[in-house]
Amino acid sequence: MPEPMPKSQMESLLHEYRRMILRLATLFHRRYRGLELDDLISEGQIAVIVAFPGYRGLQNARLSTYLFQSIYYHLRNYTNRECRFEAHSIGDATQLEAIAAGGEAQYDLVDRVERLLDRLPVRWQQLMCAYYGLREQTPQTFREIAAEWGISPQRVEQLHRRALMRLRQSS
Image (cartoon, rainbow, N blue to C red; front, side):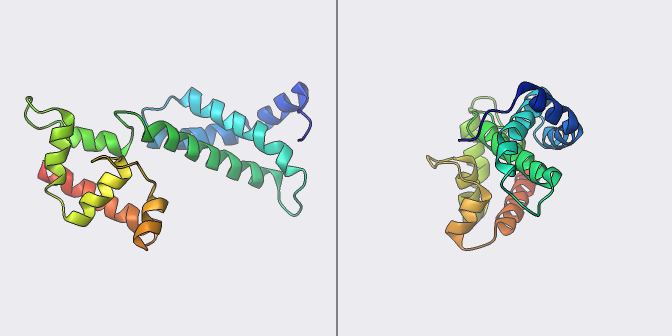
């Protein structure tokens, strides 16, 4: 296990890469509006602190490139973790909820989402259920769905966007 980083070195490192952290945190904040920018910045700082000791053994890689990738993947994992398991998820799930919210008041959100999903082709229904964890499924990432279906994650994302557009149009 590597030695803990001295506090002065850690503060210097965080100060040096503060703009990179802020830029990436802002990028994720724009995409996932429900997450606080301060939380994303803190997670970016954690990523730098965790990743820096691992860099020392690498050769032929710039520290900035290594840290950029580390921060990006840490923030991506953080946003996936935060968004996936909330009852009212952020991002696309909020769009799904907003689409469903136009329905009659006597039905709860789950019923409205179910009725909307029934308007989609079966494959798109399966995708939406797998991604959002609906109909007693465990939420999956685009990559997991792609591996299961034998297609690329980009194709899964494309189908997901089309399904959301169809839901918006039908509501």
